[in-house]
Amino acid sequence: MVRSMILIAKGRRQINIRSLYPCCAVFIMLSTVLLVRILYYSIMPSIIWAPDSYGYVNFSFRDLLSLNFTSERTPVYPAIIRSCWYVMKKQEGYLKAVVLFQMAASFIAVVYLYKSLRLIEIRKRLAILLTFLYGCNPQIFSWDKVILTESLAISGTVIFIYNIIKYLKDPLAKTGCFLAVFSLILVFHRPTFLLLLFCYFLFLVVYRFYLKRNKDIVNIPLLVSGACILVVMVYSSFYYKAYGLFSITSVMPRQLLYVCAEQGFYQSGSNESLINDISCLLSGDEKPYPSLTEIEELVKKYGLKESQEFAIKCFLKEPVSYLNYLIKTLLNEGMQVFTNGRGEYLDTWERRGYGQVAMFLGSLFSFVTLGHIYIITMINLGGFLIGWFKYKKILWVYLGIGVLLTGIIVTTFTGTNASFARTMVHVLPFFYLSLSLLIDGIPDIWRGISRLG
Image 1 (cartoon, rainbow, N blue to C red):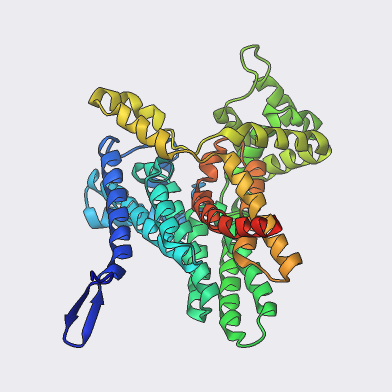
Image 2: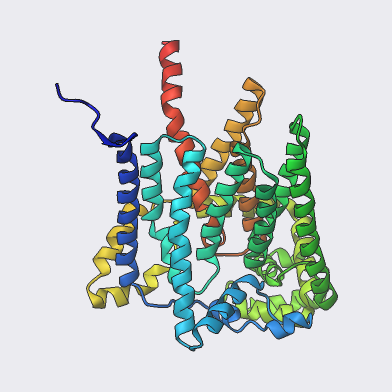
């Protein structure tokens, strides 16, 4: 009789060969992901510059330390670039080191996504499949060679997801404190993570009341996260002193004023001089909307505070029209695929003979749109409500994903004028996490339907 289980005896220790199969599957999956990424990296330019890249590379830490906020960029990503410069000591080499760091962090994030899925008890085969789809998605790793914050923002989101799930499964004060400090780092890496820090603080407040005992595992992280928020407020106060704007970046006034001018809301404003200037920009027959450069000049002329207040007051005076604009924009952008504009480089790839490979990878794995994010947001909020009203339980994962994605969608579409998918690119890990929960729950739903039959 052939034994179904082969045991190799080594003294008293026995190794179950079949138990190694899942480990081999994970290894094969990660190896395949790595090979796909290496192939894709090989057909991309060694370093990809974007218009915003120069602001990070030329960031002045001397001005920052003297509280002279001359840059609209936050300091963490420039600090990473500067650290690579100190290590490499070469004008060209240090940016390649930045790219290498981003590629390494991106691959490590693949491992942590798999670990996150297993922590929430997703079936191993499904976790391997979805991690593979995530790891091979150019929407995610095509950012790794771009000198922008997007790549590390995606990787950082995965690390946060892993640790927050770990904290829920095994609450430890040190894990909670790490999440607070890590959230602060993410905020100064990319200001869109402000929402993450505040949501984490609110989660700790609610979680403290939810716990029946041993509240020290929440009290200490709560104090640390409060201190992190205080750091953000102090930084914002220095910004306010310099520009009259309580913020950590000066990007929003430009974005809001652009929407105000493009959509015609500026006509409801009270600053006649600014209204006339915008009207002059739009007076040409061939210019239905202004350029960002022209709007930047207006922001410089009138200041950050006046520009932002003017735009917000215009929106508030026409709430129905503004709401209609937001809804229309949400729907129109629903089919927008997350991308880094890699189409700009297809000509280069075609000349190398690799264009079809890039197109194949893109069509095979790059399927996530903003519309998918809308759907999983509603599914997560629905899952939380079902858990609360039917089972009287707080399903923290559903609640966290639903609230975070709702906040990200709202702040993105109310705070920016374009590039919505790029601004929201760090939501992609949440999509795969939600997809795993949805697919993993289908057998239970089917069994329930079968019983009804």
